Structure formats: structure tokens, C-alpha cells
Length: 225
Image 1 (cartoon, rainbow, N blue to C red):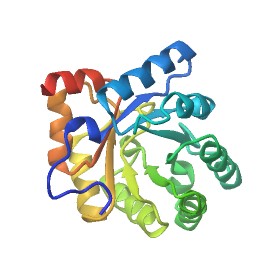
Image 2 (cartoon, rainbow, N blue to C red):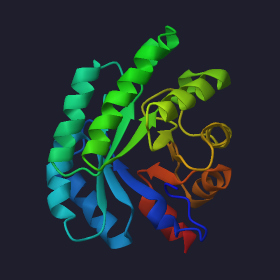
Image 3 (cartoon, rainbow, N blue to C red):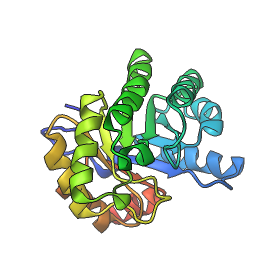
Image 4 (cartoon, one colour):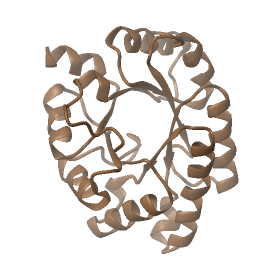
């Protein structure tokens, strides 16, 4: 089972401490890593450019590095997503959050979407890395969310993820519950986008999330105490 444990993990070990803004500076990324080491978050989630730096800063801390692929639109060709995944793994990432090709999915080309995910999944698993597929739930109907999650599972993902945080909406309790129901108990569900406090994080976990993507990780942990 991915992150499912018989004993619940403490909240800090469910958080991907995230900074994906276009204007994130090196100083801000260094601060992100300092906080992640101090609070022992599961990982930091950063854009590909900063993976090498984070991997160096977090060496020996037990905190992993996660990066994004095809982000934030999902509209990059498969070969480019594969190359991007290979690059972030070489630079030290242990987890990859890729955006599903939403346009292809909306066009009904589910075979292409599945192949796109499968290619990145193969790359990640060959590199002993975890793959999370972002379905951008705010752009989909409930039926589409179910189909997208099923495709991701069939293509070999380890997690499905609600949102990029750059779409029209973030994680909702309803979406997390629907995604959990669709993928079953053995695939991870990551709730991300708009999770600002401990109460919201707890609601997502209760609905079935096994990972939380948030820039408010420090606040969430402090509130939990």
C-alpha cells in the first residue's frame, strides 16, 4: 500500500512542502528546504530548475525531493514529459507529479492519455521513483474524474492528485472522496491546491487523502500542535 498505514502517520509526514510559483527565488527555495528539514515533511515539491539545489540542501535529512512534469497545463508532448522526468530524476528527485493531457482527455482521446501517463510511469519506475498524476479536477465533471483516475491507475501511476494549484479550483473534500472511491485502497490520493490550515488538511485526510500538497505546511503543523 502506498502511504496507507494501519497507524496514522503524523501530519508532517503526509505533507509535500510546496513552492511552484514562477517567481520563486533561490532564497525562498532555501527557506523551503530549511523548513522541510526542521519539520520533517515528507518532501519538498519544486519546479525542475530547483531540483538539484534542493537535493543537495536536503541530503541526509530524510526529506525527499518531488518535482513536476508537463506543468501546469499537461499539454506537453509525451517525449518531452519523459525527458523532463528523466532530467529531474538525474538531478535527485524521488517523486514526479505529472499533469495529465487534459486537452486530449477532453477530446475523447483516452488511448493517448493512457499512453502519455504510461510512458512517464515507466521512466519513473525504472528510476525507482514514485509517480503522481494530476487530473486537474476543477476542469472535469465527476464522471470525467472517475475515468481519468481509472486511466491513470491502468497506466501505472502510484498516486492520483487533485490539482496543480494553478487551475480554476483546488482540492475539495468531495473530489478526494470520489478519487479514493475510484482508485481503491492501494493507490495514493494527493490533495493539493487551496489547503491553508490544519482543519482543511484533516478534512482531506478523512476523505481519503494519503498526501497533502501545500505551501502552508508550517502553519498546518503548528496548528496541529
